[in-house]
Image (cartoon, rainbow, N blue to C red):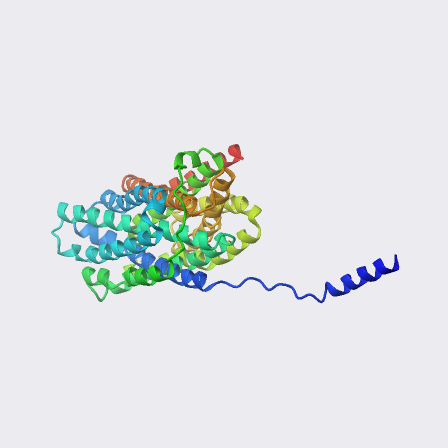
Length: 423
């Protein structure tokens, strides 16, 4: 009919004129949450990574062996493992905001106390107090990280990878500045003053308490971690997280001594070498997070490519004795840079993938589920940080750094084989 055609023509002519809806802007709470969590990540990572360049050397002066140094790094991880599971399970009962603020205060206080350990006599007293202070610090760090991950995922449910990737930029920045702070300040300051100076995360806790009110409303869940791990995909992703953190934990405990003994470098240059690992991760994380949110189907492929690249880089880090390639400084720095980039490629997609898999199992969309996922992520990461320094330290002490690097690469190769059979 002519009248109908006129109506259709008028509708078609009106449609292009309709303004497209602008993309939703972040609310004030979202902006303040990003600022708060970013500052927490930045300051916490500075306090964590400051150990790398100088603590192994200082511990050796106090009578600690390479194995004991690995155990000191590892005890932090095992306490973080246990605390992450508990905090993730009971985040609703405890309260996400209270958990974050309390964890920051505990971690900051432990960081300052660690700086006083130079006044402790060498030998058993020094080693014992290192274990105690690092264990308490790990509990506080686990509480802060578990709650911050869960709150961030709840406030940004549709852009989890993008937001976490952006926040990892501040994590990487803290990992960059921490070793530089530790390496440079040891030339001017004593160990005690050095550890008391880093900006502790405690000032951020007051700001966090003002921002995050209302972000933690949810009902307790009756689901368990064990049921979450019954899905092979989730178990495989947790193993990915474990192997990545094991490699980083091994580097924390063994890289500085290897660089000093092999290339005759000072602690300042060791800090610059560690920059090669942190800087690519810092720069790549936001882009990888945005890409995986825009193309969710690419996450498994990114993890596979990242794992294979990381495995190859660890084999060339020493390099492997079977390759008969002499150790060279430029090769070490290059492989650290590749590991940093491939680490972001592998780690960034894991958290949103676990969340989507948990929802596929019937877990409700709320803070309780996000807390369990955060706890599982933190526990898997901590288990690797416990395994990596201890096993890496043992292999380094009885064989060499080169063979220990091959072991880390071999674990990733085995992981790739497992993924082929489970997918």
